[in-house]
Length: 459
Image (cartoon, rainbow, N blue to C red; front, side, top):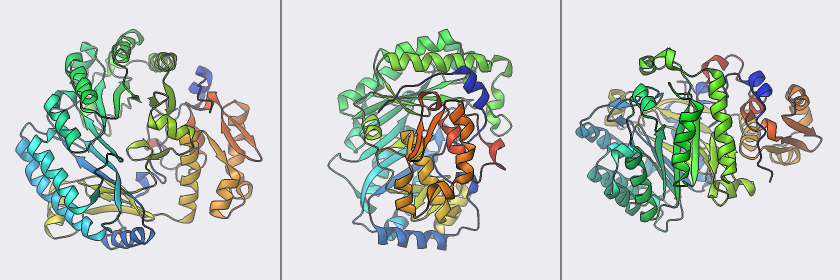
């Protein structure tokens, strides 16, 4: 598989518009409040009839301090006891859903996100894992993909050893940037020593994959300063990188208003940083997986991509997205049966519904056949950079060129620009189109036109 990238500034400037990240299709913006708990229970029944492995996502919303760039749903507090009532309700939700899902179904994927999952102390982490194991068929053979997001300021060697003993085998470390001026500008002070001590502990404890999260486009960043951060991290050679484009949307996320607009890098500087990052990581032997993700060639993500077995879900790229995904905790989103389901976003509302013995459903969407077909097309393109028309025709009973006549016409300009190659057999995304894969996917998104302004820029 050719995994090269052609960084074409002219094309990037022309195609740099707002659009979804396609961790789902339809996107979460299409979920609506007419979807009820009754609908969710029906989808669980369908899911059990179909069978297969499960994926569990737990949202831990608490953070000790606020990072000014953050667009996540979080609760800022230094009091660890504030997590106790949340855990009480989380345990009840686990018990309720555990009774509804077939206990024989194995949990192949587990993820704790946030917020800061390691805001929970050792006893609280033990408690939560115990509740999960009591109600779901969690693996004991280390064969699943069990991952957790780590803030190195909230972890030490003992934390990492405990997490490994609890069954976690993949870890992602939030860094964003090591430059002290950038850290001060976004209120995230984090030393190299803290970060690398946690990374070393994870390797010593036997975590199978280590990932570093960085953000480009933060205030005061320059090509030289970000190159220094990148070189520092490359010296310890993590298995994966996630390098995100910062979306500055202060009108939507109030905390971002604390960032000084005058300190923001220009679009030209952001692109120069991205170009430097891509060249540096490819020169170091990393593979471009897609979107913001890079991995070593022997990493499971890179292997899955070469074998045409890569998937994408709300946690990003994955090797296990064929599982039904159950979301737990406030704001979490799952996909069960033929539906997406989102939990309520407010702690009090969550506690009230759980206290009444109700599933805390806020929104949802039952997928129709067109949604499934378009979702499969987008997933194949964004994960593997090619699409086999015959495979889609066999699976969905369509004539691709007829069903997507308008969309294929919409790809002609992209073909002329060298982003992709169209043939009677399918679509091949070319090296110049890989950074712009979201644009290509957007052609197949029938919901997009009226919602585009609510998404971040693709580059």
